[in-house]
Length: 157
Image 1 (cartoon, rainbow, N blue to C red):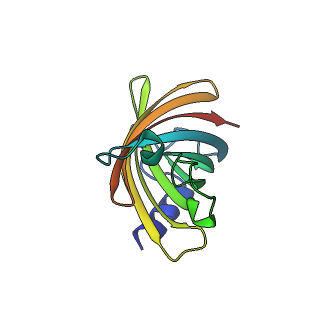
Image 2 (cartoon, one colour):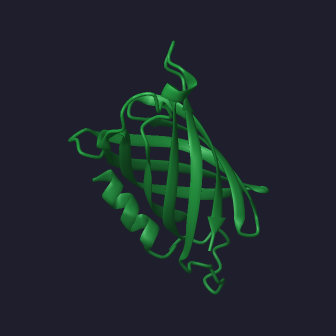
């Protein structure tokens, strides 16, 4: 229910204006983006390959929000046989705000490991820095009950 409400909030025009000027233009045109990240977790004695996972994301941004489809691999440990359940998908929303030359954002997502009934929730916060269409980001999020730090790169179309 919360995810559905955030999706609606992301896709409708901004109605509040910080400067209270009813005639001010607000850029609410939708734009698309693609991103890649490497999430790094901390699970005790597990190896780096077992505690990291790569992801790729495509989404739409509008106003201060974004809605994305994310896919990835459950870990970077390729020593075992490949299985469908090694991969996952997620629908994620984020709301952002500018802070100086950086952007800060909160995120919420829900997903599923392929070929299983195991669902997961992700929530967290992050910050980004943009130069034209290219951005770098770092976020801290709880994903499937484990905390991760994720550095990544994003390109806006």
